[in-house]
Image (cartoon, rainbow, N blue to C red; front, top):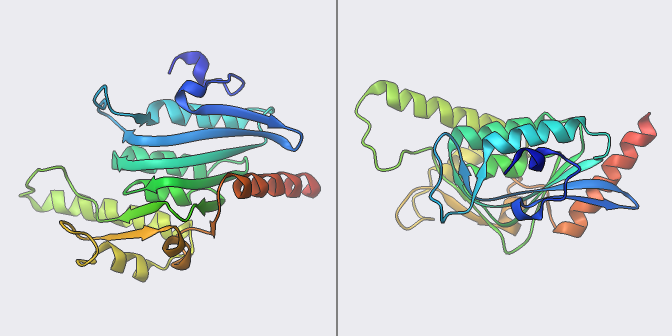
Length: 224
């Protein structure tokens, strides 16, 4: 993404960053897909979302008078934990109306990204994988490393439970299930299950998400 792509007014469909202007407002579409890329660059043939580009863009959107709200579309397998959580924290702190939609998958660190908006939707066919924070093939042999992972896990759980209706007890239970994943612990939820447990607000797609954004925009205008 070049410097111009971080400008809210530029129509840049190549990176999934598209300002949509209609009679009911101008809502910016932010697509978070593939691997959440953090401090290390993903392989060239792998689709990724770069946190160091997304975060400045979000700040610019929040300051832009031409943007009435932000629609976050999710189809991610997860990725860098700290980068994903950083993006989620920024979205959660925006003044602009925000709505998220899980379209394909909101896996791993994609879960905080799915719940960080003011209103969250998921299509019935989408899935979300909930599992503990883990390393990639590295054997941890010191107590400090385990302590770090535990603290990171607690940060993620606190964020998710603070931005959704799922209880901490229920979420921790889903994290530690041993019968839902073939070679790992955790839980896979489909769209209906994600709503039923309180993780996601509603079943819905683009139409429902845009309707929610329009309502937030109008409610904010009426309060002035």
